[in-house]
Image 1 (cartoon, one colour):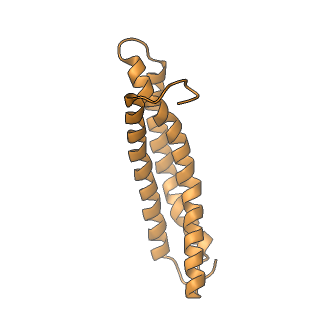
Image 2 (image 1 turned 90 degrees about the horizontal axis):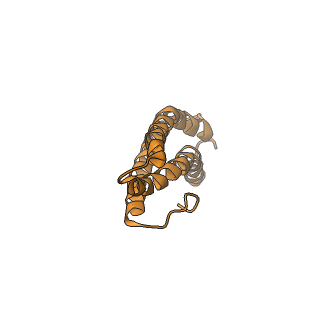
Image 3 (image 1 turned 30 degrees about the vertical axis):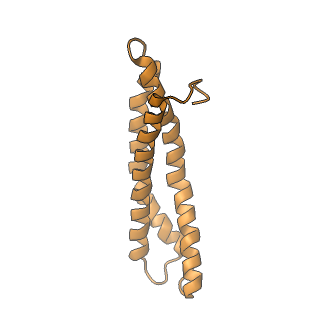
Length: 129
């Protein structure tokens, strides 16, 4: 919002709400696949390999989702005419947020999942980390 020079408004709040929905959806999908990889891992499979196996399955769909949303909203930022100023304030937080939400989903969530499961494995005393 700051980079675009927009103030917080009702339209910007709508953009943030839409962004929160999409970001939550892709984050949950990543967690589901990480849990699925955890549930199907072999006893001797290292934890980092398990998480990598689960996360790699979601890279393409998450990048495709983020790219489609951003590419669909970029023309709105260049639009002019009636209603364009309102739509730009909805699109701006979604475009910037999709970039950060994608990084969060593809990098930060698997790392946090690794830290959580590593602690769980070390407490139970089994498995490799």
